[in-house]
Image (cartoon, rainbow, N blue to C red):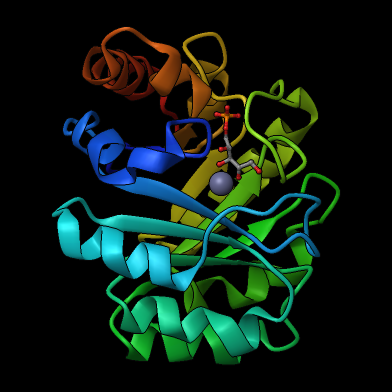
Length: 221
Ligand code: DX5
Ligand code: ZN
């Protein structure tokens, strides 16, 4: 299973997004947190900013939509060229229809689960998705601490994917750092969002490599 690091720019210098993405050239993706102040109590950036960023960088975009009504708004991010588009299970009315639409537009389609949202209703539908994002904090802000209580859900998700024999990624997002990444990888996560851990580091690319090595050694499918 590919081990992928996707730094979140949420706590970077948002007035210089292109420059901040250039600082993480060792990453596999850049994680872009879109917040609408309704689904979560915070507001970031939307489609026009992402379109301009994608025109200015070759780094593949991993767009995490923390917005209401993704059924209406998510396809435009795939049309804009995001390689991976993640929407929340709690916000989508027809997740399978939306995932199929995103795939048709050429993006990987992913469903995100808040810490208190169960994966079980989605287990029979896993093949409709390219990735499951198991949130390891309550979405809305960077710099929160990793919730260990999400580890059993990561494991159940990975086990169901293995039983299916499918190549579906499990992403974790929130509080991921050198101190927590091995626990997440050991539970079966293979894609890691790290915001503050990467951008606080003096050398973001060295931090990305260190995180990738720790995850590679700890990953268990
Ligand atoms: C939180 C966002 C995360 C956030 C992670 O709601 O979805 O992507 O930027 O930041 P850290 O790594 O600082 O927890
Ligand atoms: Zn995120």
